[in-house]
Length: 442
Image 1 (cartoon, rainbow, N blue to C red):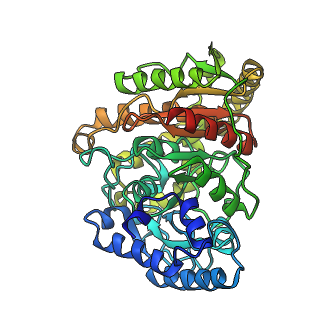
Image 2 (cartoon, helix red, strand yellow; image 1 turned 180 degrees about the vertical axis):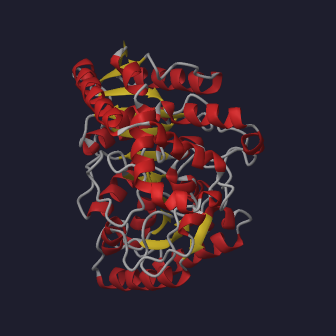
Image 3 (cartoon, rainbow, N blue to C red; image 1 turned 90 degrees about the vertical axis):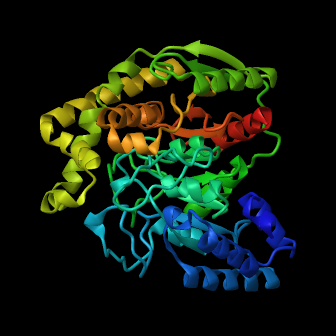
């Protein structure tokens, strides 16, 4: 049973389908692991024991009668604490939302439940999802699986930690500027950022509605593919016979490699070498307009985030972690015309990106240019917090700004990920590429 805590979600699902794993026993194993784990309370904000047991019992009955709804029917999953859960607190890591209990599940949670997944509970996160570090002094900061003194990445911090520490078979998070991919990379997981608009945001506490996306943090590309299908009630990508032969990838030079630190840089180069050995052609690429797009980040993100949250924040600003409050309030400095002009410029940058990358299957970059920063230093050094937070989000934000779908894969070097950027709404093609890369990197 201990192996169940490290198996992929799809392997657990296959075990259920073959009658080798009982969904009730599986769920009880996960619930016991969460309750007994020394970091359980730092990873889970709320554990939904009753719901999980009821869903597992239903999955077990379906398995007995040959009526399973998907490969993941009966598999235990964690949910970031910004997905509404009926009758269960959903507070988005903030004291501003303390005691908030929704009446209904988020649509993606309803879909996943309909496909048979078991909800283990709600995981901790950066306050209102506005940080890439995963540090949250208001609630809890989960530990990084590779360095317990470091932050795990955010804002889907608990989602990543729940999977990495063996406390969920898969975690569901959100990605507005990198919040699925950073904790995935720093905890050696696969993370999928979906295209904005592909998955419903109904019943999800927002940060920036034009950038917010939903995605899985998983142990394999196959898990990510099946979880994506569950989130939208669809059919998973066919990953069979995926190959890198004949593939042409761009190695992004500008922005992504600025201030790239030694370990992530070396891990990235080693990964590219393995992809080349597997038959991929890799070509250096610069997109100058990307530098312009990065300069628009402050106005585009903070103006919308502060616009959505201003009244709630200013009614009780002392309840917030000062670093997050300060970041929201940057939006005060921009006007409506500033915001509109920034979006017009960003659309021009996206057009330039599309033209520059049209001849490639995907664009590659290090997922994060830094390793997970030290938690204690972040708490006591404001300048360090600001610098590390911006660097943590810098590379992943490329995918959000350019309107892309994106995948991060473990490189084999702890806390160093390989990021793959692909065209909007090309998740199935991206997952096939990811499956081939996963094999090459292994």
